[in-house]
Image (cartoon, rainbow, N blue to C red; front, top):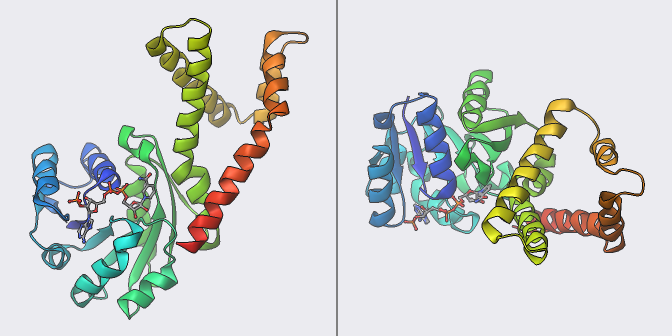
Length: 264
Ligand SMILES: NC(=O)c1ccc[n+]([C@@H]2O[C@H](COP(=O)([O-])OP(=O)(O)OC[C@H]3O[C@@H](n4cnc5c(N)ncnc54)[C@H](OP(=O)(O)O)[C@@H]3O)[C@@H](O)[C@H]2O)c1
């Protein structure tokens, strides 16, 4: 099975790293192309994969093709490769906002297509990828893609109408979580803690809290209540966060993200 990548940036690296770690394929079975030789050289050195001087050559070799360029470059890349796409090739798109209907229209024909929304924690094996496929996708293609995306975290099938929501709550949300970690660390620094230590405490608290939600199945509100002793320190912080509209700000941010995704 040959896996081809068009685009060898952050997400492609996460996917390649995951596949190789899980021994799903060998480096020789991965072929990729990028815009610049510098990127391709970096990936050859890092993973031992093969790179091609053109996108068309990479596509010609691939059984499964992963489109991993930024959404803005999708049209030009599809225009370049569409003649090489045969009906047995599985195409996986990881672009935010690009619907399956839009992608098929760009190809000008029906293609076997799975749309995925991964996120950058994939780089440390803790990604979360939402997936949906069109009617040409067979059960074995779906299983293969679930295994592929599951090699660097969780992979979950959802209906396409939920992809913009998945993009916000999963694809983009690491940025919001990083902002939260940074802000908490700033608070600890203001209280005298050295910065490095503040990031370590803040990040570990987020990691542990997320694990509690996932592993206990207890409602997040109940977990919050468990931390808030009557008349204690934590509830004072909760009061300030409510006063400053933290929950509303987060909800509005996700809604804005969904709206933008619909317009891409
Ligand atoms: N980053 C995220 O958190 C995230 C989350 C979910 C989905 N996504 C999606 O993943 C995709 C890739 O994002 P990314 O963050 O990995 O982007 P990235 O790091 O900027 O990588 C993009 C890659 O595309 C290559 N490229 C650009 N034009 C090309 C062309 N004409 N032909 C071949 N390769 C070309 C670039 O090559 P050079 O390196 O040589 O310039 C680069 O390797 C996007 O569609 C994005 O919507 C990203």
